[in-house]
Image (cartoon, rainbow, N blue to C red; front, side, top):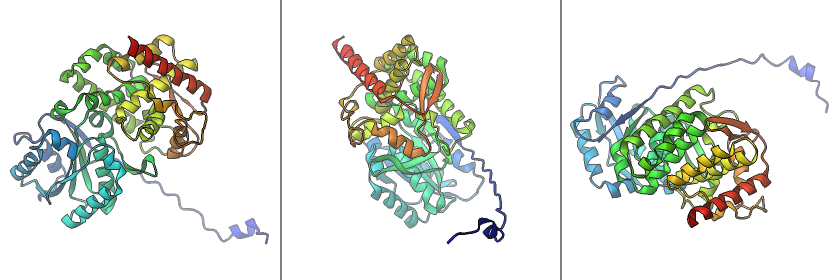
Length: 405
């Protein structure tokens, strides 16, 4: 049957064009010893909503954090009692596993939803997430999907969460063997960075978050990279003042990008803040998450910087500065999983599958951020896999030289 398009169009009504503009506002606070009774930061943040009745609060805590600070739950309960005219715990705090295990177990999401329903939380209630980035991602996803959005207050407790994942608008969990396959864009009500939590981190977690600072410095702020490079020894010594400067500037750059990039919810194909992340996400999966996210990001940064050098985009001296700074901070820049199955592009253990998964995550054409210089990025839509293989070989050589020296 042949349809006369002109004839059919007579019965079509004109489309109604709808445009909705939504503004999101949230504060990122910086404090020390948040749950001391004399510290009103959290209470003031909740009171700022202008409502007069005490708010129901459901607290979800990273189990790994409690191993380091076993008295934390008691502090939280005491705090809510002290500020009872503003907030009230709806039920016993929920404790969930930290690290990537939080994002790999869907039953945890169901348990949080069940607790929200049982406690009678509504869209004027608060979900308080205390922990590392993975816990914040999971709790944020639960908050965004219960009642189509419960107010979320994030309290990041790692360097990486305080300067990157905990301050943004993304939430999610892993599924189908893919990083953040399920998730939402839902800004928090507030974020509170407490520097006291950082004192209990082990060296790997202290170091891990610095990778995200290097990432944003390399694509946005050459002077910031200079600062990190010149203060690498202080960071290794765990100088808190230096780390606080790193976290603040990194958070500032991330928030500026979210607000001013024109694509806060990543509707296009470009994602410059994920420089180095296509390989990082795949490496996390290939190593069964034995790599911390920041450790994988450091390798991804090294790989894409090396590719940029081989492609003639990045000067040799700048390439060396990047690798030397990462190495000086204690990052390992090569793992065997980088080179596994590279000749079998469809093999699930081939690193280059990460390129396909990265493109699929956004849709549209492949868009990778590379470097034309420190502080200067460029987007490309095609890559040379042979050149990436050479880059991997160079990282392996760099690793061998580092070990021998």
